[in-house]
Amino acid sequence: MIDAVGNPQSLLLLGGTSEIALATAERYAANRPLRVVLAARPSPRLDAAAERLRGAGCSVSTLSFDAQAPDTHAEVIEQAFADGDIDITVVAFGLLGDQEKAWTDLPTAVELAQVNYVAAVSVGVALSSALQRQGHGAIVALSSAAGERARRSNFVYGSTKAGLDVFYTGLTEALRPAGIKVCVVRPGFVHTRMTEGMSAAPLSVTPEQVADVIVDSVAKGREQAWAPAPMRFVMSALRHVPRPIFRRLPI
Image (cartoon, rainbow, N blue to C red; front, side, top):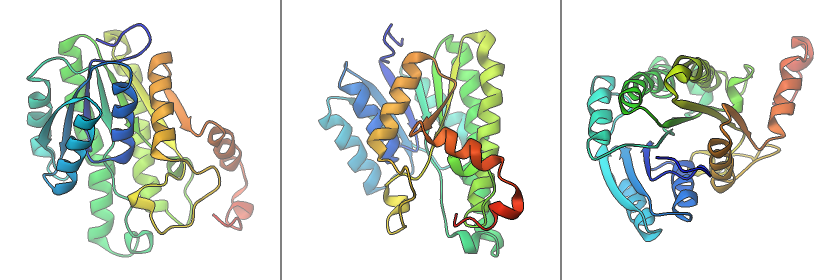
């Protein structure tokens, strides 16, 4: 169970090699002993992630999880809950991809949609069932500021995150009667392997800073959060910029 100050006893990280998800686990592990289930494709990166968390004092198990195999997702979720309750699940997998290729190459576009949106919906449905049977718990879904308004530079990626955002925002209301909490977290530019080599945008953050937002938001029962917080006001303003002006902005 999550204690009075928001600390869980167990985590499920879907996207178990995500730098943000791992930083979140480390934040929680600093406060109390933690059981962590890492779900990702088997790889040296997954092995390294498990060792990293064991080094932080966590009890860690791993599950094979492929975002592009939705027919397996319900079974993966069932396995994750087989060893006991899961207090918080972080939905942290995703692809950025080549944004120019994404709107000109069909397989690339479909892959982004399947991983970032279809898989997120698939695990969301499975998690909803598991958490309602359990009777408690929380879901943290990593969205993106890119989903707030379509931009020429990343509109395919942004469209997939917009879909994820709407689904989990709606899931917040659907699960409310069951006492299950959902928090949609919208980072801006995050310094990770995925963005390595890209020019950092204003208000960029580290995985550790996003983890701080996640931990604080869950503890305070927030349903939506931005990382960093000022990004909320930036994107709110950009949503209302007239299109002829918006398309001239260097974004």
